[in-house]
Image 1 (spheres, rainbow, N blue to C red):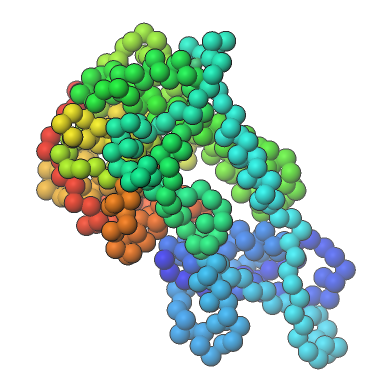
Image 2 (image 1 turned 90 degrees about the vertical axis):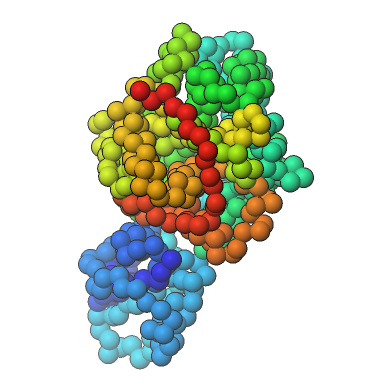
Length: 453
Ligand SMILES: [Zn+2]
């Protein structure tokens, strides 16, 4: 991450009498970011959030180091603050009639509105505890909702755990604050990792029997179920996110930067949820007819001891060579979806599984073909698959045995990659699957099975 410095010419957005005295004001921003574009977006948001109206960008983002501010007391102070908090903003205002003022005055900036974090977390927790059965045949019989594992527990999570614990991304806001807004990994018991209240006991046991009690062979049915479970977990999470943004919006004042951000996020979540609903409809129709061949997949098999367990999905936007496959910002089109997961196999092997419903084949086949080109060009497949899992799957568990031996710089690179994928202010780069995180894993895959064509 780099530090950028930029300034805006600003005016108070909310009027009060003191503002009559103001001739002008300047917001100087020190932002830790991946690139100048995200530094600009982040600065703009936080300045607006402090109730300033931005008149113009006074100086564009430039990369800076501590040396740039050695002679400047305030600048250095703010630069150091940005290193700790990820952001520092300093406002300077000057009066219309300067002759009456002899000394500069320091005033605190008190924004008219702040998100009530405590309330936000409470609501989030409450929503995640609102159990419901997502089985295609749900109804009155679904009376006992259980904590279902979205990552297979008995063979997958327990295989990488040490003393019943694995590392996962910490969702604790305190951790996020303490680490300059960067996501970190924390140890948690496998009974709690990857669980969601998305199935009743009866349906969970019945439906997932073929993958919970058997290693992946693979049969079409097993692949279907792995994909379906990833889909249902995401559906559960996105429905909750939608409700959360909705309730946050009702308590946020009009024409406020936080409201704009929430509205944009809600719009994106609505679109993602609509697409998930359409996907779930396709999966449900195939599942109730037992048309398991509607699932298409590519499975990479490794004989190495696994140290990751994961289950997730994403809408492939760019392939492994940086070509665009679909535009995630075009809210008029329905999106193709692919699921990824790790799966335990017989003889201590494990598989990296890509699977999608045939209705998504147009995009997913092109995505997998670009991976085939990578293999053909003798590039390091392990690096590409690891980068993909870390970038596109937040539902990931890591073996303590592996993580604790990992050099600090590798841990840092992984955290940075995860954060950049989740950061609202950072646009996704077309090349995000092409480079980064090289040489951290030494994965080898001996065999590939697929039913693509
Ligand atoms: Zn049920």
